[in-house]
Length: 363
Ligand code: MRU
Image (cartoon, rainbow, N blue to C red; front, side, top):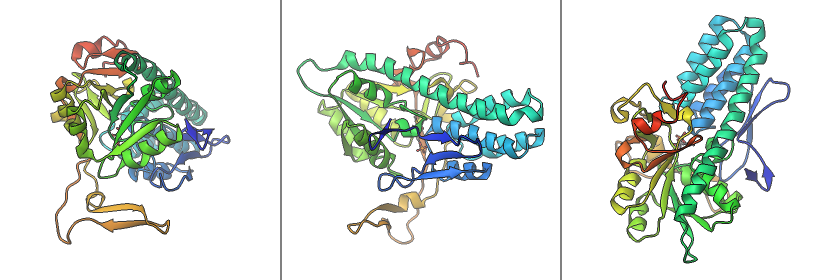
């Protein structure tokens, strides 16, 4: 997708295969800066501290972390250590485990001297596959949006939560890929962007990337979506996901569940864009079994933003001494999900629907 008119991916390896470049998402929308990661420890920090975030991008970044580790030491112990360390950076998005297992499978079968080159090749393949997968999700999602497009000249209004755009993936995004495809197809589409407290991925990232792409959008407080749905101002909700269970329960950014409830109550389609790399076929009951990341309460008690003089400053929101809590994800039960949009097509959020996707969906 575009940044100041120039096509970019959210990560790209150095030609010499000695570094990974990523966009520092902590600084957006106020500054665009690229960070150069040269060690597995740099990659661990980038994932943990959310320099990069979003389930598919976390997976691809970790794959390059393994490649950096193999540059230094490609022995069995070093491979296992890199996979363990990178896998411990964030708990909820299963793409991390998926990418690391794919790397490990590929590399463990090779002699150590062949591993470094193969690791960079495999990480490149993961990144390129992600782009193709997301574009396919966009095409399937576009067909759904076409079916909803108002015939009275009114805009098509899509509501999204968090950032599941190209910044959360290598390119295209998951939930936003259908929107980008709709724009290219000439549909008049407008996006309601949930601000997505506490880290504001909607207000900071989704709004920024939609703006860069020239897509009409409006940032709303997280609490506004239900009201807009009651008044017929939302045609569809599309969100991404961090882990989907075998029966279709969906973990995504905290607050997603409330949007699904409101959509259900108002007869608004609630679609989840799900690359197969986000499916965890080893678990069934998402509410009971998906690990939910607890992040620093400072993300709740404080807020950062640009002051009138241009400086980015942090302010405290709560009284001194108030307790705070910060569960970063929630789980939407499958019964509230209208359908899953995958790279292989649109299916119901049921065990049968997921199984119908075929190979690669059985853990
Ligand atoms: O904590 P984050 O910013 O990594 O959470 C991201 C989300 O919840 C996204 O909606 C999800 O990963 C889907 S990304 C295509």
